[in-house]
Image (cartoon, rainbow, N blue to C red; front, side, top):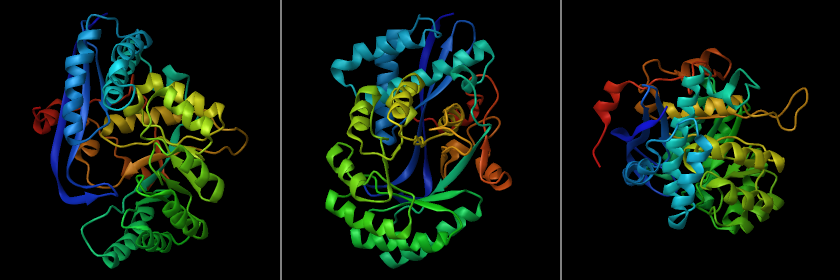
Length: 389
């Protein structure tokens, strides 16, 4: 079997309302799917992390740089392909967009491998440690409104997300330390003992401001404080972890085993959040997971994107060994974006229907059982939303 073509599909639509987080506001939803074709008619699907213009730029890397390197190779040679591509691109970037692009291709190759062998992804990895995955819902995005309006909305939205059946909820911050503490208090009020809440700062604080917010979170009983400082600030992460009770989480902006080695050896994370669609795909994710567990650092995958990303992560979370083990081990969760996302809800010929599963299954989601990733994109849907670039 040989790879005959690699094609990027960048999809986009206008959101019904503008959304924001600590770094920017955005009004369009983007997804970057990768389709790998073979001479035996087996097709694999993957996804690259990165919105808007980043997705368009990554399309150029996938089709113009990676495809010429690997067309004609055996898609089952996943590790050979991974290292060939990485070694030829490393002089031009060991992190960032080259790795995001490689991720989508690699995930598609795993999908092909599962289809060839007739096994779901979690079986290829080694089997499912759990048949269902608990899910948390995130929302409470920033908008161009007053602090008072944010406070009222965050209280109501936190309660609504838990009422949907999610076991926990996650909010955004980014208005400034004092106003952000008010937002966190609003979410703690909305949760009101019905579940855990987490806080995602998207690296908007200095270390001192992160301590200000983090100490308030300690008193509120927040479960984790995500990306409190810049991903490059490893010293800040270590200081925050040592000085706060709330769990410090992060890592979505790190790429590959070498970057993750530095994070983990620094001992600045209570919870690691690798992004499989960015760090180098499933092949590299498994190496990063092994590093995390070697450092006894629990993992909750970062999940952002289409149904391809969601399905991939369901398999990875199912196949994740318990840490450290025992009768009642610490369990990973599926991150689920509760905001408007047609690329997650309507992309597939048979939808995952995560919210219905959560509502009817005590906050849990079943793992796909079909070969490969176990889902099939609708080609007509792709044609409808694909943009040129």
